[in-house]
Image (cartoon, rainbow, N blue to C red):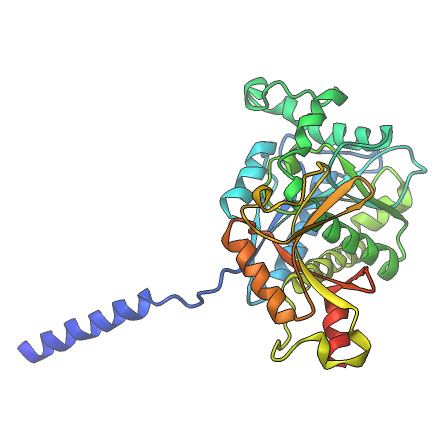
Length: 359
């Protein structure tokens, strides 16, 4: 009896040890999928029976189902059924999860002739059209209890209310644009959809998320032909596939799955002009590239494209060294740092740079 009891205790002990062992020490790549509207907030409704909240949810569930099959990807939904969520709840879900990406799915609405897909990142709207889209999506706050208190006087109808929205997301602007551009390229090149471009506007739900974030307007349900497409099984599957491919391409660009052994441009005669840097920030603010402005990192370089300044740490021809720079940047707090590549002073994709080096 004593031996049996001892064995039982021993088995339990080893069982507890086994349960305590983590399956994977690597943090998964977390994607938060946000189906716009829901519940008492239907979004756009058309006279021919299409409902934005239903189409957005269907697309989100299709995207999520496929991403869940990727081993190192974790999917979190703001909603998986027809329920009402406040904008601040959606952002809170993403922030609590410490997500790597936030993707909000919507349908657009305007006159019956308008058509095409566009993807937004947070910023000041450059024209009346961008302001109108953001205004429509932000007006849901009027359906929320105590919205005056929760949104600190934010007024979706006032252009001035949007100025302060851009500040918190600036650290992630460049990565948000990268994902948005990849989504739009897939829509235009693979699906032959009209590309309405990557745009900036003041969406509250993007403002309050602390990771790269985009809002996808998949098309105009007020256009009969496009509404038919968006509401069809084929349309939802194609749109979902384009978004899935964009997420995986984006993920791959940050962490290429490639052997880095002896991976240096000196290995190839044709790649002497390829250099690697680590992008640590992007902002509309011009900051002196001095170490004291960037948590002691040095050297810091700065470039400007359109109205956005990009800040980089380090410069090397050795990809392995660039990874070390990236880890240093992450270690001091730049958790969204990533490696970029330049060839002959022109930025190229990291995948292209590594492929060139290996050839």
